Image 1 (tube, rainbow, N blue to C red):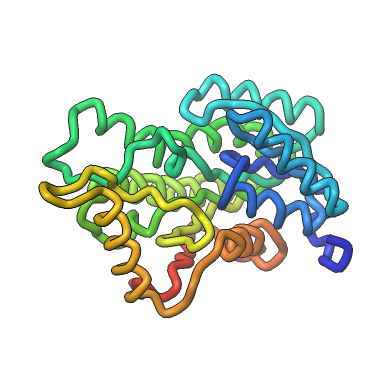
Image 2: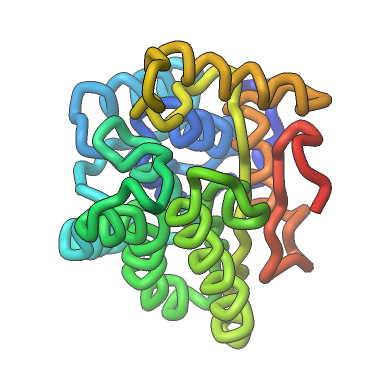
Length: 267
């Protein structure tokens, strides 16, 4: 971290879902730029490991346990951070949508009624809970940066992702509207979209069609995506996009969605 610029020095950043993969990469990237990072998640041991990695590299961080799927957990966590640190400058809202207990890809006809709420909660409401919690603190401080992370299925219609994509599209539209609402309080709101990430465990539908082994279907979906992508994408590529919005490069940007998909789509 010593050779990184310190453009986020003095800033306090909360990264939700930061105990692994994309969220962890975001936490490490923001810390490398000088921010004090609050690593959020449900797994204390995994969170402590990310904090240790950040501190070993010369950064500052702490772990705060909270379940993204519970609004009251997120509110309490954000309020604790604000009281202890005095201000919250950055929210990177990630996680939940790719957790091991989140709903995987499925055709609409195969979903139960209970699945509909689960998709919306994982891919949309988790972001809304976090944004709602940090907004009063950012408003009081006179500004801030909010970056919501989601899937490219919210931009491009994809078979098997009707609810994943629909929920994320709603989240992205919410961010655009909030960019207009929060702009008067000097709060920027943007989102980052992604597709297949090479060094993250992908959440593909594992319910096989008749006569096909789930692992074969899984591999086929990944191979198909890889063939369509022109460039490989890693967790840190997502983290760099979040850091752009969080730092001085994003001073004049709000209400936008930046897609990091390796050329999989150009819409």
